[in-house]
Amino acid sequence: MSASDVSDYLAENPNFLNEHPELVEVLVPPSERTGRNVLDMQRFMVERMQKTLGEVKDRQGEIVAATRSNLSSLSRIHAAVLAMYEPSTFHQLVEVITTEVAEILEVDVVTICVESVDTEPGKLASTSGVIVVEPGTVDDLIGRGQDATLRDELDSENIVFGGASTLVKSDALVRLNVGQKVPPALLAMGSRNDDRFTPSQGTELLTFLGLAMSHRMREWLERGE
Image 1: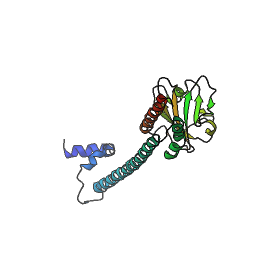
Image 2 (image 1 turned 60 degrees about the vertical axis):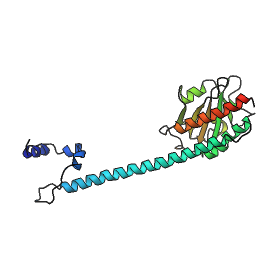
Image 3 (image 1 turned 30 degrees about the vertical axis):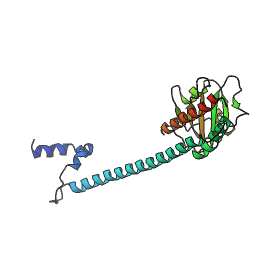
Image 4 (image 1 turned 90 degrees about the vertical axis):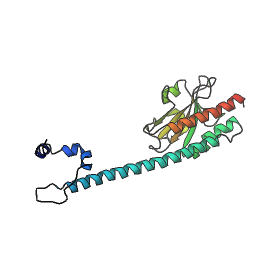
């Protein structure tokens, strides 16, 4: 293939370099212009590289921001887990989960929902922060086989938050596997901000929190305290 063939092909396919931008990086630009009809390839390449560099910088900025956010979230999750080892009774543990953990994780409301057929759905008077829900609710809300789910479109009558349901605009629901003798349960964390929890966010840290919380609750229940 001669230079003339290449020239003719490019003339017939003016979008070739647009469709194959990676070739711009290996092309050698003309050192000078020799006439009005000479294409300024050097300028084209510089503009292309500047655009690519800008995209790389933007992407790096997003990665740095995401990394900082993840580190902050990780620190809060670790602090929440440590807080659960301070209570000396099961009821104090529940209180820490529904109050101190809420503050640590910077959410507006935290509840523990437990399925029951013996109690009317609603708030347990004997244990503040615990909500009784109908059998099957945990799988219905989180999904069978799933450990956590994030939602930003909520029903105003969302039962998992009791009287605070109208306040919550987005939430995180985490499955709690407390033991075979304990009915299905979940941890519900709600925020008044509709973008605090979204389905596009990861749930790995929340799943870890759910495992740690389940383990801690199981320890107290096995003691019978």
